[in-house]
Length: 268
Image (tube, rainbow, N blue to C red; front, side, top):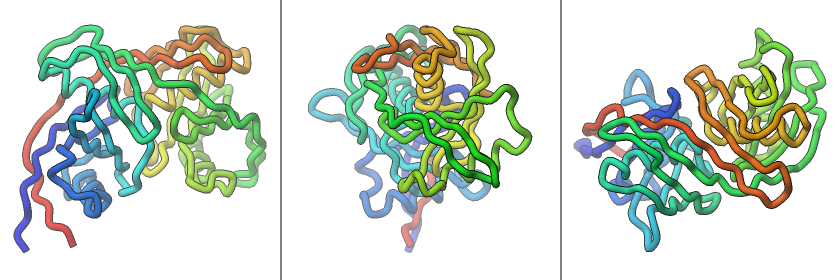
């Protein structure tokens, strides 16, 4: 069977990279395989995930698959990348529909390939504080959802084995659908630094939902005050949250279009 050329656009938000593909081009039963193939950094294009997009009755619909082929609820950075994709085509404000609900996106500024996007990320939901055993250690973590599962661990300094610890927590029995993991170092009351182990991806340069989870966990615990600058290995984004139940989180940060082209895909 000959390979079918599938058009893609590559975008990144603080180094968290995504491939944007017309949802019509890949039928749902082939999307997991397609995501694994195109996200492969040696035999494919390379990315942390694929956003399958299409116009909806109101705004645009996004379906996210991580690099391992697992379908995910949403990505804050991936959603910003989609907003940048449409901003180049005239989009300035409107709803982006994800599996976790509708996010309101607003283009703050930008042109051509570089954009600054504000997202209303919805209301966080807290499970509470948990003590989890991982790598023969007891880890205190804040467990919450930003539309996807999050596990936030405060550290004084990032441990040398944080990637191994992140992998152990990602697949901990406490999380039947696995989880995203953030290690958080408090710089000051308006500045956090984090490291991210993303579900289905591994260590990533940045994470929008992870930055939101880190900030809201810190605000709720009294470590920080809104707005919070969250520094990741890939860059900085700003999270705002009023700090009480029922209030929505806002995420502000950059998104950049990197490339576009054709990927040759043959479903097995």
